[in-house]
Amino acid sequence: MTKPDLTLGIMQPYFFPYLGHFSLIAAVDEWLVFDLTQYTPRTWMNRNRVLHPSTGWQYVTVPLANSSISTKTLDARILDRAQAKSALTGKLSHYRKKAPYYRAVSRLVDEVFDGATDDSLVHLNVRALAAVCDYLGIPFAYRICSELGLSLPEGLGPGEWALEICAGLGATGYLNPASGQELFDPAAFARRGIRLYFAQPKEFAYSTGPYQYEPHLSILDVLMWNAPQDVAQAVRRCVQISEGNLVMHDGA
Image (cartoon, rainbow, N blue to C red; front, side, top):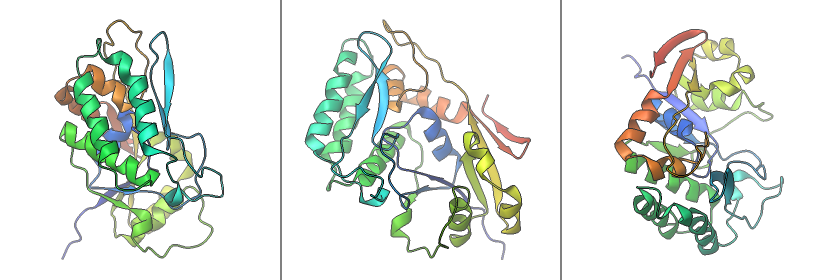
């Protein structure tokens, strides 16, 4: 019996990430939330960027109770979820009279924060990914790595985690952002019967009303200005996927 194809994406749990993150989710069969390594402070895991009310962009952040490099990602805890939500909605409030989808995005943010049942940063970020995918009509089949009980070798390097996780789950393919291509050994994946793919995002430019457009902001900004069906199309269109130097799919 032929083993069915299973292409995985494996990424750290980012906070309302940019559109290219969702292009990866839409292109794989299953998404693995990678929460096994040490937490890195001041990364996209607990912050992102939205438009500033005057000019440029500003950070939106979820403050943590424990954010040192000795903390594992799976153990990162939110300092005060209600306060984090209040700070986020405050920094989004200037969109109210200008962005056509402000109310819909505000409801989405409420759903993410109000439905959380603990102070886990990982769980909050997964809720955000799931809520955005549901809003856009994108399938989101996911598992959290720390909950799988995988037996992984000690001392794995940055490019080796994905290989061992894929092998442990019987995957036939793995998709990674092209920006990390130099970390991976295609021959090592081939020896384990796993095809290695890379995704190069393309910019999705859109009108931001009275503000100057800023690229690569949080998906929250994209959703503020664009109908969900248009964002869903951009998620699938604005990416180029290749295996080695061979282009397999061009969303243009």
